Image (cartoon, rainbow, N blue to C red; front, side):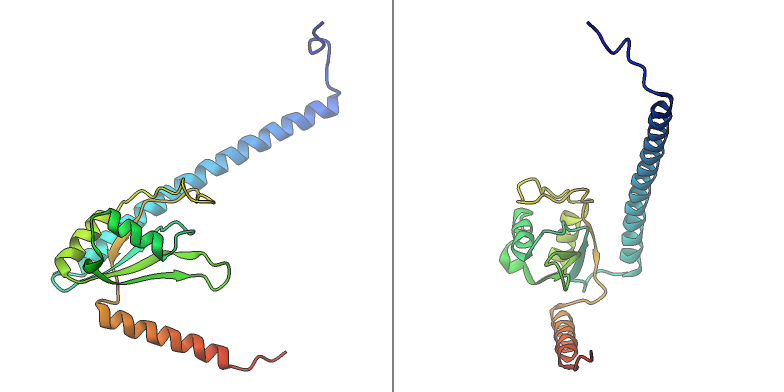
Length: 182
């Protein structure tokens, strides 16, 4: 016996179902617009990277690369493993910085890598730019991770990066020394 043919929801319930269906359609449209906006942002990031590279001019002395769109769960060993998987050896780089959030322990989505030689740096930039992250094997896989966007970093060279690290470390140390007033 098919009861669905004889069941008619009360008028109020029918109206609620129609309203929920309309609300669901609106939410789907908003989600589609958000995804389109994310794609647009990705294109903007790519164009910004190309502009930065063009502004950098002659690239003979550039060795430090910033990598954006890192999976937030990545840690330094993950990045080092990736560098090696792309065909670069430990001797090819001398600085890796993966900035972590102050709270939460996740990275901020970008990293800096300084390579020993400008020609190796150029090859690394080409190898990592557009890299598609594989996060399926992680305990908690990252979702909606965009491909890597790589460009020349503003701070260039090992010494300049180490100096910046010292400055940041000092700022952090100084902040911890400031008495807290309640």
